[in-house]
Amino acid sequence: AIEETLVLIKPDGVARNLTGEILRRIEAKGYSLVDLRMLQADRDLLAAHYAEHEGKPFYEPLVEFMQSGPVVAVRVAGNRVIEGFRVLAGTTDPTTAAPGTIRGDFGRDWGLKVQQNLVHGSDSVESAERELALWFA
Ligand code: CMP
Image (cartoon, rainbow, N blue to C red; front, side, top):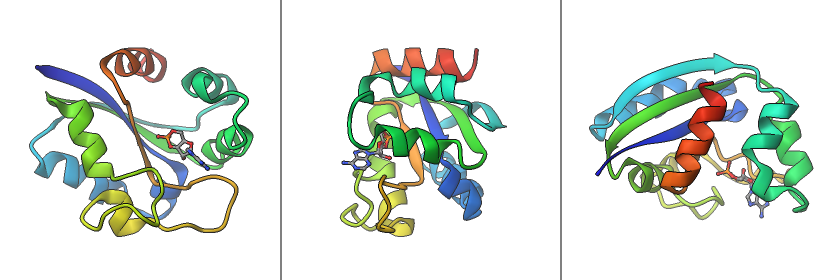
C-alpha cells in the first residue's frame, strides 16, 4: 500500500553535508519527497518523538545530540516506504550496517554515548502517523 514515513536527517548528517546524498538515495529508489523542513528541534519535540525510549541509558545523550544542530525532517511517500527506507538506512549500529546502506556507507562508531547514525526512519504505520503529526504540525 502507499504509505508515508518520517525521515529525519540527524545533526551529524546535516553537519557532514550528507543531506543531498541522503535525499538523492531516497529519490533514486523511486520514493517521493512530499514535504521537507530544516529546523532546530527543541526538547519538547524530541521528548514526544522519543517517548518510547524514555528511561533507557541512551535517552539523555540522544535528546542532547538531537539538539546539537539543525535536522532535516522529510515526509516521504511510496509503496512500502516505511520498510523500504529502513532498508536504505541500514541497521542502527553504523559499524555493522551493511555497505550500500546510508549508515553502512557513511556511518561509524565515534565512541560517544549515543549512536550517531545519520538518519531516522519511522518503524511502523502507527509510528509514522504519530511522528509526522509531531514534525509537520
Ligand atoms: P533512531 O532510529 O532515531 O531511534 C532511537 C535512536 O537511539 C537510534 O536511532 C540511535 O540513534 C539511538 N540508539 C538506539 N540504540 C542505541 C544504543 N544501544 N546505544 C546508543 N544509542 C542507541
